[in-house]
Every structure is written in C-alpha cells, then in structure tokens.
Amino acid sequence: MNLILLLVVVVAAGAVLSVQAAINGRLGQAVGVLRGSLVTFSVGAIVTALMIFFFEPVQAVSLLDVPKWQLTGALFGVVYMMVMVGAVPVVGTAVATVAVIVGQLGMGMLIDNFGWLGNPAIELSGARIVAMVCLALALVFMYRSNTRTD
Image 1 (cartoon, helix red, strand yellow):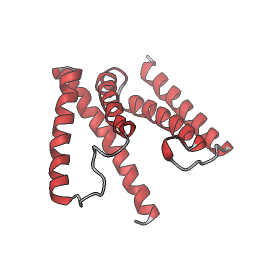
Image 2 (cartoon, helix red, strand yellow):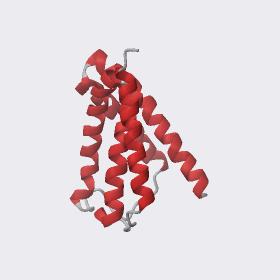
Image 3 (cartoon, rainbow, N blue to C red):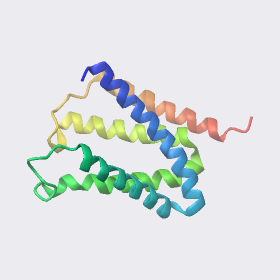
C-alpha cells in the first residue's frame, strides 16, 4: 500500500476513534460505563467474527499457538474503552482524545527507542521530543479552554 494512502487511512481511523469516543460517552452516561463497554465489545466481536469468517485467509498459527503475552492487547483495549466512556462526558471528546494521543505518543516513543515488544528500534530524536512537548502543550491549552469562564 502506498505510504501516503496508508497515512490517510490511519488519520481517518483516528477520526473514527473520536466519533466512537463521543458516541460511547453518551452511551455510558445512559446505561453505565461497564454496560456501554460491553455493548461496544460485543458488537465489535460479532462484526470481527463475521469478517474473519468471510474474509480472513487461513493462518499458519492459531491464537492458541502465539505467545500468551501477545493476547494482553485485548486487556488494554478494555481499559481504554472504559476510561474513554467515563472521561468523555466529563472532559469532552477533544480533550480526552488529545490526552489519549499524548499517552500513545509517549509510550510509542519509548517502544520505538528501546525496540520493546519485538519492534524495530527507532532512536529518540530531538524532533520527536519537540513533537511530544507540543502535543503536551496542546493538551494543557485545550483543557484550560474547557475550564475558562470568560
């Protein structure tokens, strides 16, 4: 896949996550954080199962054969979902989304720098640090704009 097209698709996926956060925040307010998360994961599991059934080619390795630590990503998805369902109604979709991105960027830079989890090492550069500082400042400014009473 063309690199530019791939980046466009990733940006679009990020946009969809913000829409999902806003919708799930409202759902969580109506039915509760845990029930809202359960509905989200249930629908996601059903859709994914159908996609596997109709589109996924046969894999050489099954879920039972992979190292068990690789299955922990699902647990992190549960934490993310429950936090977002609870946070979005309180701080708003934009602030919650930027806060998630700050966390993602920080951890992503550590994973890249040290080559954790079997990923190739990508050295921490000054440009990456400046990007992190800028994003952290964006979070501060966005949060402060939520709490202003001018």
